[in-house]
Amino acid sequence: MNFRQTVYEAQEQEILIYNHLLFKLASGQVFGPDQPIALKLLGSERSFEALEGVAMELEDSLFPLLREVSMSINPYEVFQDVEWALLIGAKPRGPGMERADLLDINGQIFAEQGSALNVVASRNVKVIVVGNPCNTNALICLKNAPNIPAKNFHALTRLDENRAKCQLALKAGVFYDQVSNATIWGNHSTTQVPDFLNARINGLPVKEVIKDQKWLEEEFTEKVRKRGGVLNKKWGRSSAASTAVSIADAIRSLITPTPEGDWFSSGVYTTRNPYGVAEDIVFNMPCRSKVNGDYELVKDVTFDDYLLKRITKTEAELLAEKRCVAHLIGEGVAFCDLPEDTMHPEEM
Image (cartoon, rainbow, N blue to C red; front, side):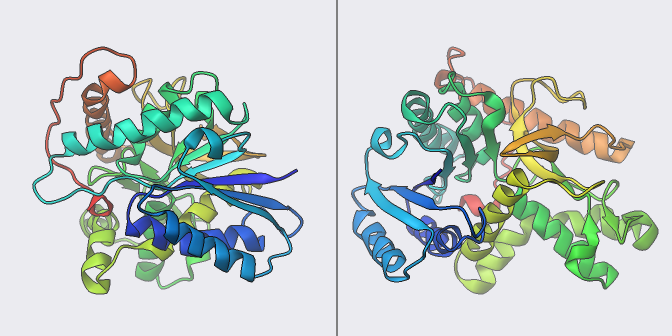
C-alpha cells in the first residue's frame, strides 16, 4: 500500500521545510524501511517551478521506496485517495496585520483544503496542519470535511514539545531522551502551556530533579514560547529544519506504539475530552498512540492551580479565535473579540 503525503506551498519558508521533510519521507525514515511511498505535492502558480526542482532532486536521489512524485495546483487532484495530508503552507503575518486578519486569510485556505479532502481523500486520511495559526486552521479544516472523522485532524504541537524537552534536559544536565511525559497544552501561541508538573526526567517528576520553581514557572515557559523568535533573529531565517523533524516525529508517534507510561502532545479535537476543556475546538493535549494513526487521550494526568489557571487562559483564546472564524465553520457571522495579541514567532 502506498502512503501519499500532501504538502501545500505558500511562501519560501514552506519550500525550506519541504527540502528537509520530503527526503526524510522518501528515504523511509518516517514510515519505515519497508513502506513504499508516493509523494503528491500541492503548490501554487508562484511556487510550481521550485517544487519541480525539489521533485527532480528526489528522483535523482534514487530512493528505492519512492514510487511516485506528482504535483498540481488543484487540491482536488492532489488529495485524490491520500492517506496522509501534511498541510504546511499558510500566509505569514506581515507588518501591521492583526491576528484576526491572519485567521481569516489563512482560514479560507484551510476551508478550501478541508472541502477538497472531504470529497476525494481516503475516508481514513490523517491530516496534520502545520500552517499557522494551526489550531484554529485545523478546526476550520475538519469542519469543512464532515465525511472524515474529526479525530483524524491534528495541529502540529511537536516542535513546542521538543523545545520543552530540550530546555528541561539542558537545565537538568541530562540527554534529551531522558525527558518524558512532556505536554504542551492549549494553543500554538504565546498562551501555550508547557507542562512541567507531569513531565519526568529519568522517570522522576521534573520538580524533584529541578528544584528551581521560579525557573520552571518563568524562564522555562518563556524560553519554550519564544524559542522560534530567538532562533529567527540569530539565524536570520525560520526554524524550517526543526519543524520538519517535528512533523516526522509527530507522524512516527501516531504510527508506532507509545512506550509504556509515556505520551506525546498533539493539537486534537476536544469533544469528549477527560480534562474539562471546552468542547468543539482543537486543543493541544497529551495522547498515546493506538498505532496506524489512531490515538487515545491520556487520563492519568495531574493538575494544580498554576496549571489550570494557564490552561483556562489559552482555552479562552481558542474560543475567541473560533468566534473569529464562525463564517468559515458554518456557525454564522464572525465576531472577533480576541483578548490580546498573542502572536507566535512562527506566524511572522
